Length: 50
Image 1 (cartoon, rainbow, N blue to C red):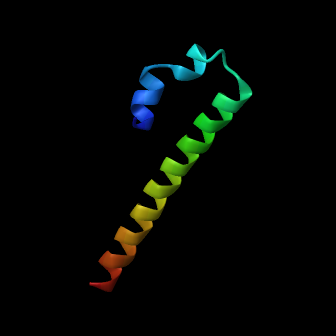
Image 2 (image 1 turned 60 degrees about the horizontal axis):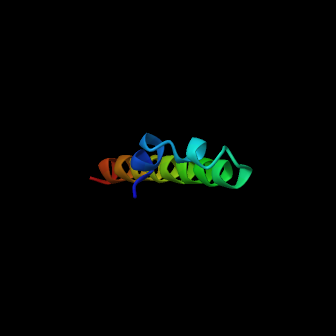
């Protein structure tokens, strides 16, 4: 399941907004955004190197 599917299904609400589920959701989202950030930085470094 992707994070988008996770959010679309609103599993945090379905699980009663428990702290464990909420924390997992926040960690997952943060990780995805960190990966996007790093991919962007790598792309910019590659452009400079060319």
